[in-house]
Image 1: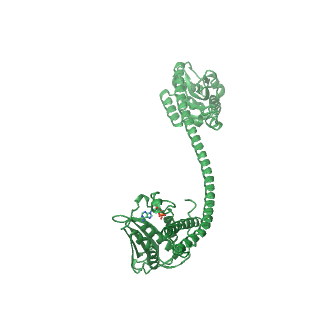
Image 2: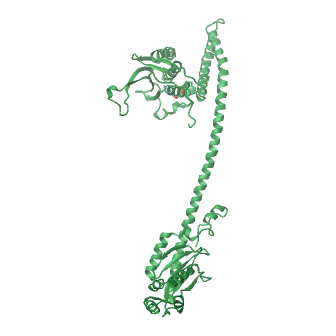
Image 3: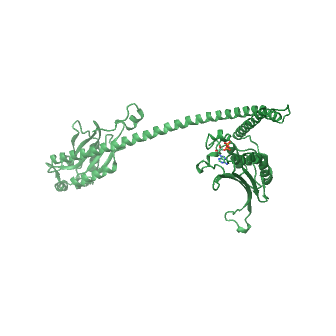
Length: 484
Ligand code: ADP
């Protein structure tokens, strides 16, 4: 018979499931054993008990013989009976693994070993039974309990069924074989479950180990990220000052303040000015991002009227749109709703959205900016009548273009820093992929939301919703939470 062998190199397994350590009472399937003993008792009419090698009773199915019950009625008989039973329990079945243990009454027990993989793991005690040659109780019975009625004992003995030695040998061999099979399969299941448990524990330990290492790596990455942000902030800041000078001087050159320029020179200066402008936008974006990440992008709380902010943005970007051949219009109702917010940051939001809309719309296209006030009833849970419910106002600004549009699956991702739907767009349209991530963070810091819808028949609509006054702004745009 084979069994699952524990890896010898692992003392923990050998200790838990090793052959020496496993005791019969630890692994024997009790339900199967009970069924087996019940059927043996029913079939052969003989009591059967199973003990482990350590002497623990693991299972039993027996009923008292009338002679035994009679003997147990008197104290001497009871005492002798108890001594016989406990002796039978610890009798060593010897090298053959099969012995007969005699009772003082003349009855007998057959004791057979249970072996498993060369190891004696327990014993089966069959009996008591009446050996076929026994015609009268043993004289020892009268010696043990002189008050016992000998005639009655003889009469009871005559009524007991007798068992022939050969028949009992066959029964014993049958019970032993069957039980050893149960032991084998129980032990196998036990070893398998222990191994499984061990491997689960081992996987758990490995997982804990990996988690610890990941945590360390995460901490290190966070430190590096902080370093990177500090570095970016410093470099951007240092670059901005000379760049502002380059822009200023190229502007003055272009205006002819340093003397007249040839057409070609003017063209070069315009390129210097335009490229410097792009570079400044990139640097400003990086600075904003690092500020937001470190939680130092402050918000100046004030009361904001959206209509003038939108008008301002349109005025600023109208020349760009005109140059590109894109029609840019603004429509809104009276927008009679004050917002609590940082006017400069909100201007940055709408500038960014309109700038993108113009950028991603081809010549002949349209960009329409609309603003309106939304009024929503707020219903308090279990609150009073709807008529008494307060009205919450918010401002909705829609920037709709007839440009290239954004596929639905990209609409969440375009708000990630540095993400561009098509990275070649950097070359075609310019830009860094930073604008929308900044827009989203500023809008959310104002308690608002920004989402993208499709425009018909083509293009996209950016919808910004900002709650009306009475919102308490945070001091700065919150940095991303450490869990994300
Ligand atoms: P940038 O415009 O500098 O690349 P943004 O963060 O503003 O960065 O935009 C990220 C990306 O989202 C853009 O590169 C572009 O792919 C897409 N996008 C933004 N606005 C629009 C728009 N109005 N129409 C089509 N695509 C847009």
